Amino acid sequence: MPEETDTGNVVDFVKVHSDEIAQHINEYSFLVADALSVIVLGMLAVFVLHKLVAKFLFRFMSNARLVLVVFGTLYVLVFVVTVLLVIKKMGFETKDLGAIAILTILIGAVLVYYLIPFLPRLPFKPGHMIETVGVMGTVDSISSFHTTLRKFDGTLAFLPNALVMASRILNYSYIP
Figure 1 (tube, rainbow, N blue to C red):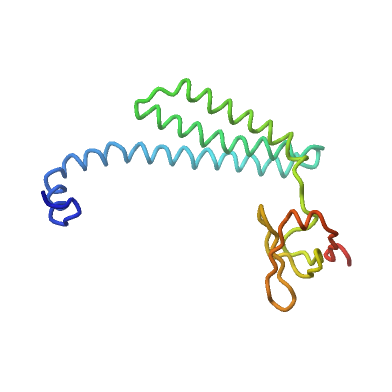
Figure 2: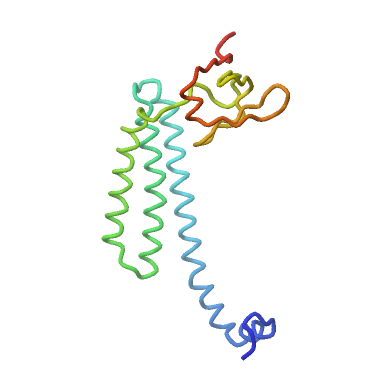
């Protein structure tokens, strides 16, 4: 039996099954196009609504974090509902899966809303000039595990965040 990667076998397979391949492409291309259009339109609608709320209501709201969590949840819900509609259109039952997915998203949003204030934050952001752990420089990046400082001689210092948070930090960017 010849190898399946042989170019002749692939060409022969396509020649023999070209009608079937075209039928599958024709059948699923509309499904993919519909799903992508619903995702794009849904995300666009949430984006426009978010910008309108940000422009007109943020100044009247005392809790801007709530608005951010709500719209983040809406973005995820639009995406998940679209995926569920595509799965349903493919012929699978989505009633139980949909309920679990939406409930998980809503519980996640509530957890994010209440846990954000308890997450530790570093008192600087990229671009700030700081001194910590005996190293002075400009913050190049911050990751989950380390902070990268660009020292004035051009070298990079990678400092573990646990060490940075446990030491004294001087942020010169807040000084005029």
